[in-house]
Image (tube, each protein chain N blue to C red):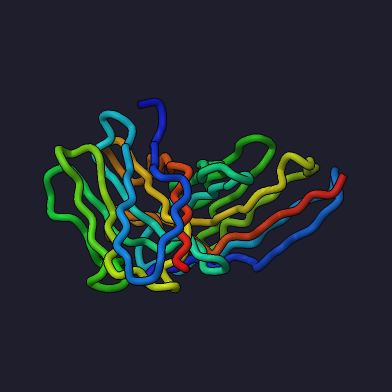
Length: 115
Length: 113
């Protein structure tokens, strides 16, 4: 597609429920990233996929968070047993092959509210 | 580890004022430096970048110079407009270390007409 697409754009969920957030990167972009943007906290790295390599999960805050990327394209971020502190904007970004200096293209994000 | 520190906001200026948003970094290697901008209701966009010391990135009237001696990458614009109101993020990437960009906490800029 022309840009990075994320869905849903807004999600309100009850505490304890599971949620799935979807990211559709730019066609041909081999690298895909998830970040979390909390008020006053900037962007927090969560997970990174590059081609067929094992993902870099070093930023996932707990084992309630997981992500997968199917067929090297679409990615789903899953949060199990959501907590109020999970409320944030979840941003996906993709990057074409080459050095990270090429920079990311970000989606518009999913605003998650846990009530 | 690598990190980015930028001035806290919000920053409020009148239209046509001079803008500086300070950014300093800590890195063990030789990172590339970025400024991203997030306009209201939109995703982050790359504003400018510099990949080595003394490089100047520029775009839309904004400039930032990679200063290795002061580990800084301050964002400047000579005359801001209302449309520049946004959140600005300083960031770095060290491709010799890993493949992710590390962001500062962001600085919210309000420009008054």
